[in-house]
Amino acid sequence: MGHWLLAFVSAYGAVFLLELPDKTTALTLVLSSRFHSRPVLAGAAVAFALQSVIAVALGSAITLLPERIVAGTIAVLFGLGAFLLLRESLAADTDEADGAGVSGRDAVPFARAVMISFGTLFLTEWGDASQVTAIGVAARYATPVAVGIGTFLALMSVTMLALLVGRKLRAKVPAHLIQRGAAVVFVIFALLAAWKAIV
Image 1 (cartoon, rainbow, N blue to C red):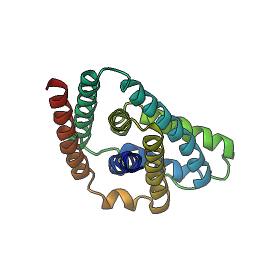
Image 2: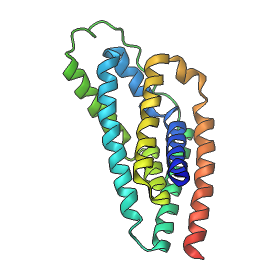
Image 3: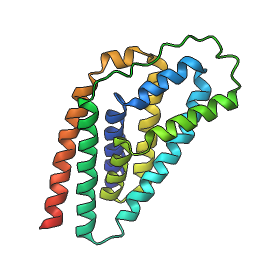
Image 4: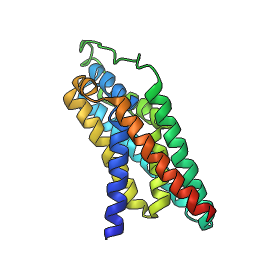
């Protein structure tokens, strides 16, 4: 049970911190300015459930390999995650959320708003640092259910915060500091895994 809880907390904590200042939050803000919150939340739930299953499946498949290859793969994944975080933190933050008005929100059918929200959020998560993190955590702890649930709940938590708090969330969170701090942690994890693969 302790191992399961550790995997859950690791997945939830890492993905939550990564997603808080991420483009997914900004996209959720844009979607919520154009559609009601319920279809955005429904589309996000389906998108993130699928992304969590895919990440856990990839991470679980990695654990079937020999131990040294697994450690080397984890090192590469965390190294890639660190690179993605540093790249995003150093990039100029020019993509401010578009302040579109709420006119026309009632004109969009619920199902259409769900599909648009699902499609945009699902595609946004491909190759994202949080997806790489979920794969790495799943490979490390070999408890796919815990990692899947933790990843999904973290993504949904950030989405609900973005819907509830709105634009003020991005203004109060120092995105570059969180990203750089997480990148340092990723580098440490990558070095530890690399050492395990070599020794």
